[in-house]
Image 1 (spheres, rainbow, N blue to C red):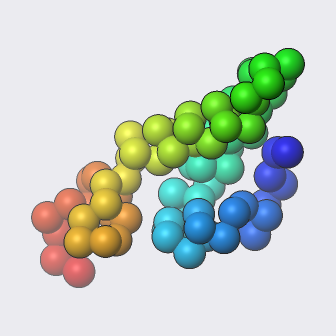
Image 2: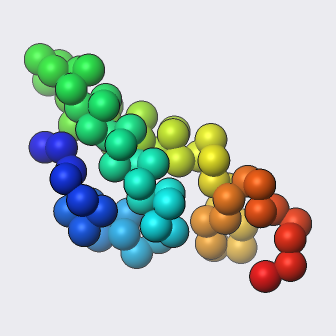
Image 3: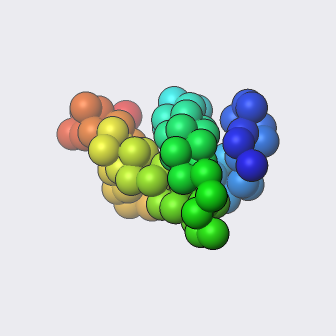
Amino acid sequence: MPYVINADLPQSVQWNLPEHAQDIYREAFNHAFVAHAGDPRQEEAAHRIAWAAVKRSYLKLAGKWVGRADRGRAP
């Protein structure tokens, strides 16, 4: 089931990821969901691909997701 807005994402995604990372997740999920149509594990594959997309731009440090470009900057 594709997600129209970030508020439609699973709560675990909403609670843990910053807004921009949620955008990345949503867009990657939706694209992968369509690309894997007919696959019995379509939704599972789409979630895995979405997390991989987030991890290309974000890193989890001390329990918080931060942009890779922001690493090392003062809060």
